[in-house]
Length: 364
Image (cartoon, rainbow, N blue to C red; front, side):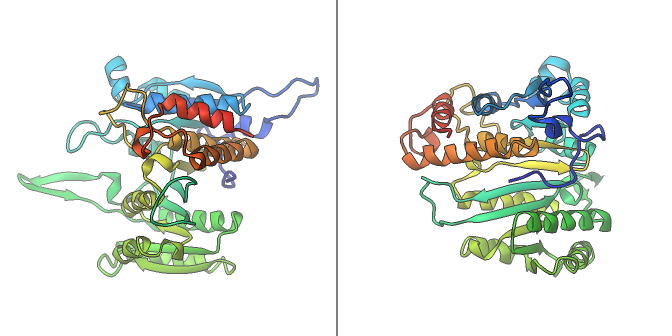
């Protein structure tokens, strides 16, 4: 998958590494390797992101990694889950490869993922959900793209206590954000030869907020006569996804629904261990695994690195190394189709390193 059009770096300039890849200056010198912030993450993050980095290196793409800490690891070392060094790095590089970060339930610091998306206005979350060779799942031939608005809605976490025992969460939907994500979805569909965009909502109940989201999507859809457009209530869409997922193509969702539905879609193709993720904005991109930190298996070397490896392939697409990204995806298919190297979560005994090594051997 190629980089969505118009994406530059977080500091406002286009990512030089992406444009200069493989080019030579007037004196014949090769362009410098692109600099990318590397955030290993918490729990199994360092293991799976480490695997992704070794595969990227093996495919022959040179990247200047700027390793930074975030989350629990950063809190222990710097006293902050989002240290200044991390923010400075992201402003400088404009792009990151990130592992999962700890988000405590009901307590602790706010989600770092949400914070970074809002800070750098990474408004579009994209998750390709594609049937994975070699996995035994209820459906075959699934090829969905889940596009989720990333900056507002209930998921933004704007809430407060009104009185003891009474908490209010605020759902904010704006015409600006709704129009922007709808246009992103239709542009993505057109660029990638997709046939249908489905806006998913609950406007039958939330007539103003979800109603505004739908009105914006409808207005945008009029500019794309070559792409079909439909709408579906979120609960009906979930039912349809688990009975006939091939009825969908590109799914366009608000933030909270998008988080839930994208995980549901991942379950159709084997689980979160197989689905990559990316967050795009006009000022940069962060590529991140969509699964959790899995603290119960952290440090054991048995975590499935496929989602991280495929996320690394999305990063290469963004850096204009599309062929290398495609080679990685093809190698993953080869390994899983053979069913000889499988991590414990999919019935095997292979380690994280074994899986990465098998993908490297399968590179063509």
